[in-house]
Amino acid sequence: MTEQEKITASAKTHRRVAEHILEMAKKQGASDAEVAISNSTGISIQVRLGEVETLEYHRDKGIGITVYFGQKKGSSSLSAIEEPALEEAVTAACHIAKYTSEDDCTGLADKASLAMTYPDLQLYYPWSLSTEEGITLTQETEQLGRQYDKRISNSEGAALSTHENHLVYANTAGFCGDYSSSFYNLSCTLIANEGSAMQRDYGYSVARDPLDLYSAKKIAEEAASRTLRRLGAQKLTTRKAPVIFSAEVATGLISHFLGAIRGSNLYRKSSFLLDQLDKPVFPDFVQIREEPHLIKGLASAPFDGEGVRTQARNLVQAGILKEYILSTYSARKLGMKTTGNAGSVHNILVSTQPYSLDALLKKMDTGLLVTELMGQGINLVTGDYSRGATGFWVEKGELCYPVEEITIAGNLKEMFQHIVHIGCDVEKRSAIQTGPILIAEMMIAGN
Image 1 (spheres, rainbow, N blue to C red):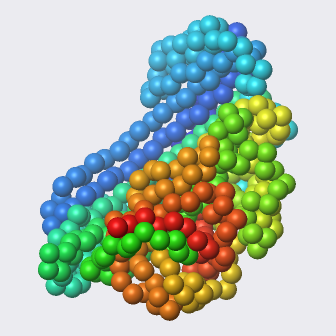
Image 2: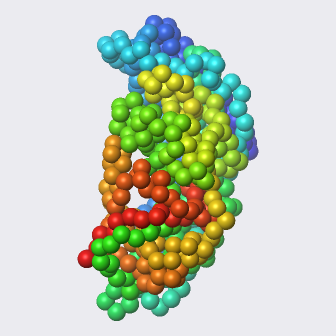
Image 3: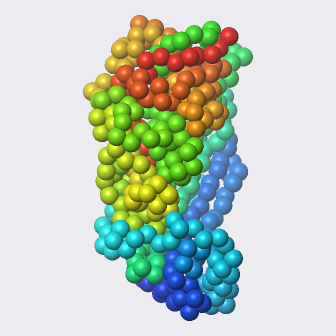
């Protein structure tokens, strides 16, 4: 039996199990029910200084069951598909539901929103990688990094992880769907010394298809060059200055925006972007789009965690906030309709301008390029932002010297409005794809 035939047979089995669970829930009096079955496999390999430190095999099966008795909800989960266990799990969920309070926003997604047909997004690429081959690849990545320069004195190791998952979701509104996905990650973290100075940095690659992973050589070179350029880092005196977030850290900046427009934060009134729909939150050159159906997309999905169809849409258009991120429950709490985001967002694409990072540095002239952030100093209620940072001080559009042990601070609402440019060197190793972002001014705290 081929790999695809095995997957098809497994999906059929899990569909039958899901339908059986829904029938049991109905027989026990549930007005509605839903079930998600996930079956995943993979390996994790960690090597350091050429020796295998960690080797783990993963084989996980999870079944999540939710039942509704009118506006009452109960849930249970298990990891086996044997009949006694399934029946006990359904009974437990029904028992919980009977004793919970009513909530007029709970329940299945409206049938009209369900993805009764959905596309194949080509998310699954099985990798017939033996354990020995995986160890060899991971060791090679680290070895190439350590040999890159004599100043590379140590290593925090290289790591390889593989993850293949098969998902089935079904509910009593008549939806039953399934799809398979894969995700692979190869990374390396190195340490460099120069005199008494010591620095670390990393390189990595992620992909749905193992053929799309960067080579061991490219990852090693990225890790080594990033580490070496941090040697000789200095502190800065406290000041205000323009700041460029490199593309890799700019993804985090956009993720804070997404958190602020997520329905759960909005209906709890714990977002600094309350009541901002159809109002400008970015400069007018900024567009932010969700594209759930990108072939091989790292965050692509044909339907969300409730079986709702996913679709491309503009979250921000000409700087104006046009849409929220809503599940069925949060949509009902806000008197709106679900946006197909139960569980997550799907491939966020931020518009760019025709400026490379070098061009952005020249436009900034003098300021800070941030390449790494630390800490969690973000308050989504107020928008206050304060995080530890490392990067490079820039003068006359050129990198002058690396900097460390500084803090950058501002308010997210003001930071978004004061974006000057977004560069075209897009970070594509993330569910959020954006170029480097130049902000007019931030507070930099140092000596």
